[in-house]
Image (cartoon, rainbow, N blue to C red):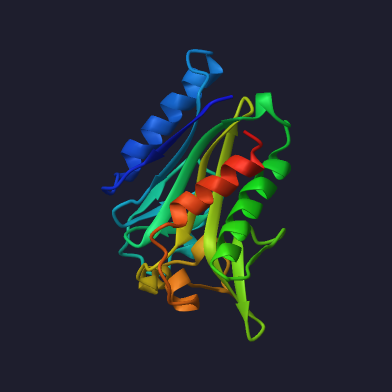
Length: 207
C-alpha cells in the first residue's frame, strides 16, 4: 500500500480541499486509484459544521457556518492551525472505525510527547486534551467520515492560532471545556510538527 504525502505551503480553501478528498475517495472505491493520501495544510478562516451540529451551538449569530458531511459538530479552521486530511482504505486494514480513530489519536499524542507535552484522548469527548490544574483543554479536533470502508476527512491541531474565534461557537458541542493551542501550552519551535506527525501516522498505520 502506497500513501502519497502532500504538504501545502499556501492556505487551501475548504471547499477545494474537500472536493479533492471526495474525488480521491471515489477513485479508490472504483479502483481507479490505489494510492492513499495524507495531506497537511491550513485553511483561511472558516466555521464548519458536521452532521450532528445544532443551531444552539452558534453563540455569535452573525457568523456563517458551512455545513459539511464529516462527523462531529461545529469547529473553526484558520491561520495558525495545522490540518491533516487523509484518505485511508480500511478494506486493506481492519474494518474497524474505533480502531482507526485510536490510531489517529495515538499518532497525535505520540507527536506531542516528542515536544514534551503530555496529552490524552477521551472516549466520550472526541479529540486530544491537555490537562493542567485539573482543567482539560482541547488542542486537537478529529472529524472522520467513512464511505464503503474508505475513511477520510481528518483532524486539526492548534499551534499558534487566535483562540477568540472559538468564543463565537460551542466548539465540537462541548460547552464545559475550553480550547487551547500549543504555543499557550509551551513556547517552543513547532515548525517541524507536520513531519513528526507524518512519522507517527505512517508507523501507526503500519505502512
